Each structure stands twice: as C-alpha cells, then as structure tokens.
Image 1 (tube, rainbow, N blue to C red):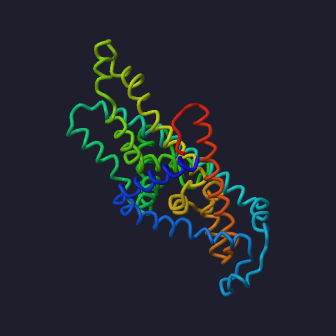
Image 2 (image 1 turned 60 degrees about the vertical axis):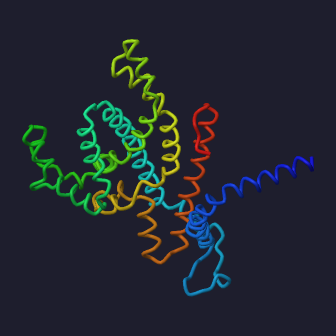
Image 3 (image 1 turned 30 degrees about the horizontal axis):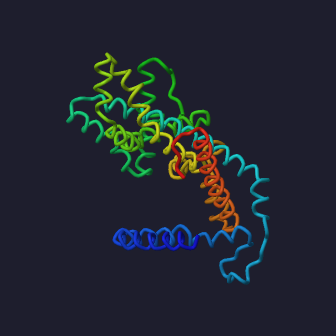
Amino acid sequence: MKRHRLLFDQLFIKNLSRQRQLIYMSLPIILYVILFAYVPLWGWTMAFQNFKPAKTFFNQEWAGIRWFVFLFSDKVFLRDVRNTIAMSFINTSLGFITAITFALLLNEIRHVLLKRVVQTISYLPHFLSWVIVTGLVSAMLAVEGGAVNDVFKALGFIKEPILWLSKPQYFWGIIGVTYVWKEVGWNTIIYLAAIAGIDPALYEAAQIDGCSRYQKMWHITLPCIKPTIIILLIMSIGRILDAGFEMQYLLRNGLVMEVSDTIDIYVLLFGLRNSNYSLATAAGMFKNVVNISLIFIANAIARKAGEERLI
C-alpha cells in the first residue's frame, strides 16, 4: 500500500513538473477567483448581525437568523421572489428555444457571406447597454408616435393606443421579447460552435439515405448538440433567481411594481437605500444559496438520466 502511495506521489509530482507552464498561466485566474469570489464570502456574516458600518467586526450586535425570518414573512419579498422566478423562467425558455432554432436555421444557409452578415447583425444588440435598449423599448411602445401602436392600428388589431408599459399583464411578455432580441444572436454562437464540430460524414450518410434537410436537423444536428444544450440548461437553472436588474428597474413604474420588482431591486430599495446592510446581505445570500443548490440538483438529475453533467 505504501509502495503504491509512493508511486502515485512520484507520478503526481512528475506531472506537475511537466505541466508547470500551464500551472503558472493558471495562477492569475486562481488568484482572481479567490480574491473576488471567495474572500467576499466573509461579508455573509453581516446577514447574522445588526450591522453598523461604524463598528468593528467584534463590536457588532449578533442577530442570529432574525433577518431571514423577516424576509420569509415579508409579503413584498415573497412577491419579488415570484416575479424573479417567473421572469427568469420566461427569459430562459424563450432564450433556449429561439437560440437553438436560430442556430439550426443559420446552419442551413449555404451562402457564407450572407450567413456571416446575418449572424453579425443578430448579435450586435448584445453589446448595447440596457439603458439604450430600454430607451428603445420605451420609444417603440410609446402611446404617441410609438411604432408598435402605429403598426397595430394600421393592421386593425387595435382601435386605440395601448399603454404597454402601464399594464401589468404585458410586462413579463415585454421583458421576455426584449431579452430575446438583445441576446438571441450571442446565445447562438455556442450552438453554432457545437454544430461545427459534427462529423460531416453523418450528413453525407443521411444524404445517401434520402433524408431531407429537416430530417438531418432533427436526427443528426439536434442529437449531436444535445450535450451542449444540457450543460447550458444546467447553468441556466443555476441562475433561476437572477432574472436581471437593469431592464426591470429602468422599465418599472408605479403601475407595474407588483410584477416588475425582483430580488435585486428589493435589495436596492429596502436594503442599500435604507442602509440596512444586514437585510440586503440576507436576501443576496438566500438567492445565491438557492442558485447553487439548484445547480447540484439539476446536475444530479442529469447524472441519473445518463445525460451530460456540469460537475
């Protein structure tokens, strides 16, 4: 046993020495992750304190789980959790469907120049800030001079302009459509990369068997990019409580607050603005713990199903 252990240690040291250049290159990334991802976890202690900025850590008053009890008994917070999950589910569902569909359609374009132009135009909105995007959305949905109202009136769908951003029943749909318009091209890049790695011999064999282009997509392309879809789905499930902040905050108003506010907006309004850092930390801690738990659950389900997994 000791001999095997010694051989393993020698082999491990030999591999480290052989790959020392890669280790040296990885050190900055490791330090970055430790500094910005793990060291700040010390701040989670504020969630269990009545934190006062002027006091040192040892002079803080400990509050136990008081702020977590407050969160789960606060109807506003529970409402914001509902809104966050709903908008995140809409964005994730629409994002997956549109990105996969768009990637499949782009892959069928045989004209290389046209394909590059379409792909470039599709992911350009990703580089626009949410301030610009929400400004465009507000202008498009305006009552006077808004393109959406003008088009719908011209087509006879409506008789009077609709106050789109003042109707709670439309808000989640507007968020979903805006997210798809901004991110669909960028999300497609990963799927196109996965499609590019498919063995062309599979398509040639299908061509010989008389498969149509639709049948090739359904029986070759989709099954081959299935592992990529599963991995991205697991990662998306881990962000279920990250529906966003900028878009909702910039489009919200007093008439749609019941459906527009998310956990991040709650942290800003009731935590940071009121200097209640313990409440803000507790809300953020809850969100991160749930997201991490969902990643492990989704990964376990994928492993049980025999699919690709993240961990």
